[in-house]
Amino acid sequence: MKVIIVGAGKIGLILADILISQKNDVTAIDLNNKRLCYLQDKLDMKVINGNGSYPSVLRNAGAKDSNTLFAVTNSDEINIITCQIAHSLFNIPNKIARLKASEYINESRNLFNSKNIPIDYILLPEKLIVDYICKLIKYPGSLQVVDFADDEISIVTLKIHCENSLIGTSILRINSYLISLNVRIILIYREGKIIFPTESTIIFSGDEVSFISRKKDIQHIIVKLQNFRKQYKKIMIVGGGDIGVGLAKKLEGFYIIKLVERSKKRANKLSEILYRTVVLHGDTSDIEFLNEEKISQIDMFISVTNEDESNIMYAMLAKKMGAKNVVAIVNHSVYMEILKDEEIDIIVSPKLITVSTFLSFFKKTGLVNTFSLRENMIDIIEVIVKKTMNSKLIGKKISEINLPRYIEIIAVLSKKSVILYANEKIISENDHIILLIKKESQEIQLEEIISEYL
Image (cartoon, rainbow, N blue to C red; front, side):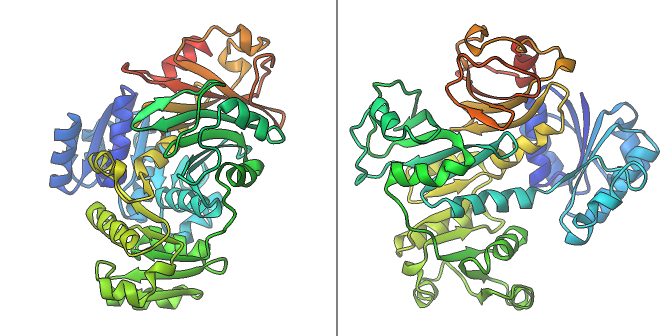
């Protein structure tokens, strides 16, 4: 597939990386030559220096033969006009625009359609990250919460701390303990290694356990697995950009929120629009400032500035000074590798969060959702079974489906019923199938898996 990306910032880089890994022909357009050189060096792809909303630049990028255009600059207006030109002059079938302004987003249903402005999908990366972090706050003790199957099914990761009473307990006994709840432990991460548990697997201190369940049962399961009931109350957000402001707006009124911004001008502006958030002008690398703001009383400290290094430093310092839980947004995978054993409770990767949305734009194979776990060693994918896609699954029991050893069906949503141990389940049209794919050392293409086995 031939794809054009207009905008070579963070979102453009994530997009290009994903699309090239899926064997697409990708061209990036940007006015910033430095960004383009970085993309070209990192991904060995075609780049064009120019304004992506200009017809001549799009033509030079091969718009006439392109299937999809992503307009992901920092300007909503440029993204909108780029999609309009891509439609009017080049008839590009799929046009995706990144939007940030609520003025456009709130009117999206009336504005963006075939009769008005021809944008097929709206991309809201900041909102995705805000929603992801809010789920971590909603479910204290969780390291990761990812939803599937129209939000009926969730995969949750949590850490087993040294005082947990389940240490030394087998999966068989834990299953008995959780028998009243519809839950399945799908993997354990221990000392850098992934373990796919059997009934005899024993839980150790420090294990990170991932389970799949009905979304409505998450809170009960976390309480049982962690003996953890306390809800977060006091939250400090560092960074007054789109993500920080989005978090404050969504959380204020439910929690005690402090937002810290280094720019005095920006802090003054935010204090006028965040009515139930305490907006502070300050520097969270300043120990005196943190002490004044009683950092040791903060239940969750969240650093969401535009700089990885700052987020890492702020989170580590806050943890050292007594913040109970710390979260840092980190874009570069090299930092994520280094930080595995450091004192940061949760590292949020924008790439992992946004990849599922990017891939869901291409639904011809029935793939509607995907999420990578454990440094991309595990993919969780969701497929909707359709007769029109000549699915090989319809009418078969799961036990009769011949899948390779690295693929496992871990859940099925059928007519609002969640089935986790599903060997005797007969697959029907419109069932949502959740699969766990062990990548091992091979390059696995999701669309090839779906077409060959599903």
